[in-house]
Image (cartoon, rainbow, N blue to C red):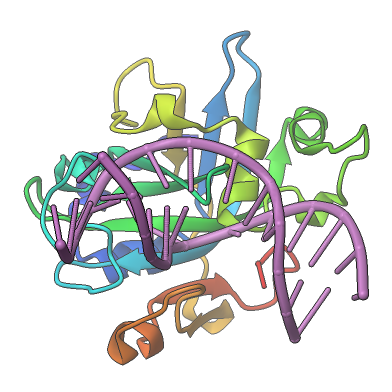
Length: 200
DNA sequence: CGTTGGATTGGCT
DNA sequence: GCCAATCCAACGC
């Protein structure tokens, strides 16, 4: 199935976050193995948003958020976790969508290996349930920070999948956002209402 | 240059 | 429900 074009990401971040539901995030390993999952939960981090990493201007860490749409922004947090975003809007406008959960589709055996602790794999519904969990399952780390997902030979990209109708979509405040009451309460998290693969 | 706390998770009470 | 794990960029002095 074809990939979403760069123009898809070059739009309002909230619209992109909402329309990413049902799309398929694909990671191609060095040996050609495809790992993929249906996007079931996203969050928008917009220009001027006090919860966004770029709120106080450009820094070494958030620089990818200022790059062209379709670039990956992968940040390291809590000393051990990676989180994956796709950059949105025009280059120079800092914005991105955090992908928070996937319904595993391809390469589930490999994902179980990546997510195993002491030789024990979590239940399939937990493999990609959470932003750091999906990064571990798909082997997404700092090597993909600032990576153009629309490059011809890209090993990380998003396919069209099947858009989710409004009737099966729900919104809520974002998870783990503290500080500014506006940023904490605005409903910029979207998820597939009846999916067991959604976090929290 | 020292301090702080984070777009989280897993394990334990 | 609570808290430690474990790095490091950002910010304040």
